[in-house]
Length: 136
Image (cartoon, rainbow, N blue to C red; front, side):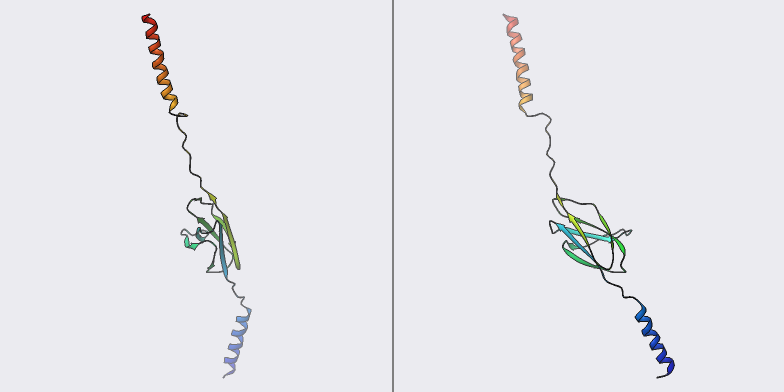
């Protein structure tokens, strides 16, 4: 092996030793109750990714320290607002407490059907009473 080849190997090894290792980044998404569908994207992107249901950890590609937008949906529950967090090296956890959706209770126009029926019967009774008093 030539001297120049040995020097090249030493320089390459030194350069590799000086480059910091990139740590893996993970998103952990939890919901209460569990089982919600997860949607996430890099902040600024337009399309969300749906990897499955909550209580999972997702390895995200790229370098750490990127903002991610995450939201969840579950039938029968109000969809909470999107959460945005800076995802660094290691695991960043997103937690969603879901609130049950309550169905709207329709309000009737009248308190009950007895009111309009009572008014009609009362008016009819008053007309008949007036007619019978005029005849006498």
